[in-house]
Structure formats: structure tokens, C-alpha cells
Image (cartoon, rainbow, N blue to C red):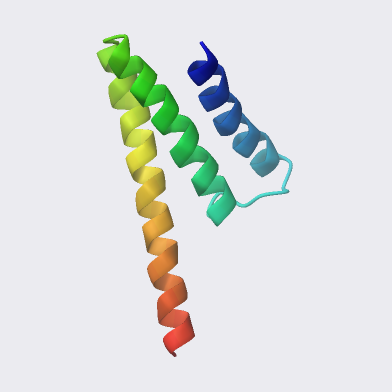
Length: 81
């Protein structure tokens, strides 16, 4: 139960801050909160054999991680220019 609440809270916190205009959906903070939160939920869903939620949260985590990787390489490109 703790993992579910923590994972959901992280994702919802990022979403609320984004909707309030306090955090961009493409920011490192937003993406990290989503990677961690969705990974927690995917792990818990896997443990409970809830395959639909494993797919949902797993994809959410992967897409957020790809966003973080993209930001990293964009920043590296900017610094080397």
C-alpha cells in the first residue's frame, strides 16, 4: 500500500504543479517525479500480477525516462556548442 500511495502521490504532485504553471512537463523535476512514481506503481502492479497496470505504468516510466535522456543529450549538445 505504501508503494502505491507514494507512486501515485509523486505523479499527481508533478501533474498538479504542471497544471498550476509551476513546473513544465518537459522539466527534469517533472520527468524524475514521473519516472520514480510510475516505476513504483509498475513494480507493485507486477508483484500483484495486474498486467494492464504493468503496461500502463511501465510505458509511463519508459517514456519519462526517454524524456530525461533526451534532455541530458540536449544539454550536453548546448554545452559543447
